[in-house]
Amino acid sequence: MSDKMSDSVVRIFDTTLRDGEQSPGASMTVEQKLVIARQLEKLGVDVIEAGFAASSEGDFESIARISREVSRPRVLSLARSQEGDINRALKAVEQAKNPGIHIFIATSDIHLKHKLRMSRQEVLDAAVKAVAYAKKHIDYIEFSAEDASRSDPDFLIQVFKEVIRAGARTINVPDTTGYAIPSEFGALMSQLIERTAGADRVTWSAHCHNDLGLAVANSLAAVHNGARQIECTINGIGERAGNTSLEEVVMALRTRKNYLSLDTGIVTEQIYPTSRLVSQVTGIAIPINKPIVGDNAFAHEAGIHQDGVLKHRQTYEIMTPESIGIPGNRLVMGKHSGRHAFDERLKHLGFNLSKEDMNRAFLRFKELADKKKNVYDEDIEAIVAEEILRVPGQPDRYELLYLSVNSSSDGVPAATMKMRVGGEERMDHASGDGVVDACYKVIAKITGSQSQLVRYTVNAITGGADAQGGVSCLIEDDGIRVSGQGAHTDIIMASALAFINALNKLEGRKHYRRLVEREGP
Ligand SMILES: [Zn+2]
Image 1 (spheres, rainbow, N blue to C red):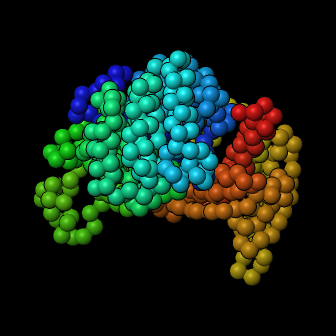
Image 2: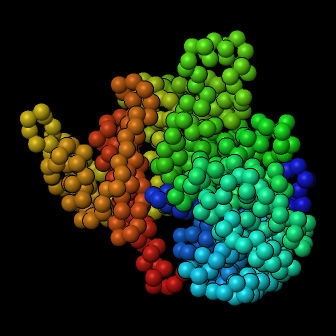
Image 3: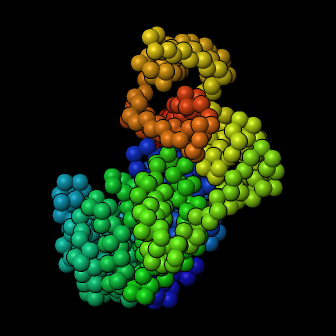
């Protein structure tokens, strides 16, 4: 990929796998990240920030595997302005076709004083030294001034001038705390581009957070003032209130091209499948009123609107659902649907599975179709999330073998369960405030888990009394938060599966932490 893009094209930098993963409970396994990375390539993103190599073994490994498997987008690792971080990042992206490294340091006085405890001169020296060091090993370097929107513009200009001279190719201006106002952020971008020596040799980039709900607006203000890269995440997930939403900013550029005169390389028809995939994998639900990808984004309820849309779509629609890949007619599958139709449907939904995973998913689909008449896209997504994406290449430690619950209006709810724990079968029972509570208590008893249940959500995946229930839970143990998902026609089973799924993920995370503690990152 050439980074001297035409002047009217905005480069899309996706950080779902790095900044997005910092959303509480969104941690993903290496396998899950690979599935998302492949889909991001299909979506047409220009850059994938695959992780922060020095932060953990898991991050390092996912960056290395994504580097090997993805061919068109540039693959980056984040690194602090330190030699150790840079070496680790370089090693992780070594096998990428288009490798890159993203070096950052904070530049605002508040970060200098309270976090880094460094003077401005020390920060400047560290930034230049880091970029110059990396440049000896790799050509493509992006440099970020963390908390740029709260930094002194004169100091930013000085730092940017020096890192451009040292070899940085992209200069990123983050609104790390989501503090900026669009007109102000646009003016900052314009001032930086105008006053920094060497500005015309690099691509300028915006990285905005959504604490005031302005991330998309600030990103648009940045490109309107000369930036040509936007950093964003699918569904806007990320630290705190999240990052700029890829789907919103891309569709704003496309829908208002008549005003902004800018393009992206995004295949917009892949937006909807990508959004659903990320939601399924992370367990972070998409709010129904979310622009572009929410359930209600294209639903016209008011009679007068429906009437208008039926007569002429553009009366109330500025975009079509087809343009973002929402299937026009929702296909319903059932027990007579064949293997070919199922494979086609999986592909249409954005899942690129191996042959073996396809076989497993098809078996689960047949099982489900025996129990319920109509199988919808959402059911298929749930099957894939439940059966395929959760397995990080090794058998799960915990497995549910048998569950029986007891509930009546005047008795105490109780659950009896048999589980396999590492190869050994264990059985126990417990009572609780309700059947779900009893189930969770018996699972905790059998596994010896001390984890706390932070959040528990249920939603019917599809309509009807035989609908599959989707349960998502967030648990915390020893400072680690993970989410688990379960889907089943029986909501109690779905709840138990979600909890067990979370416990299995927790095992994986603890395993990585032990590795890092023993060998260092
Ligand atoms: Zn960020």
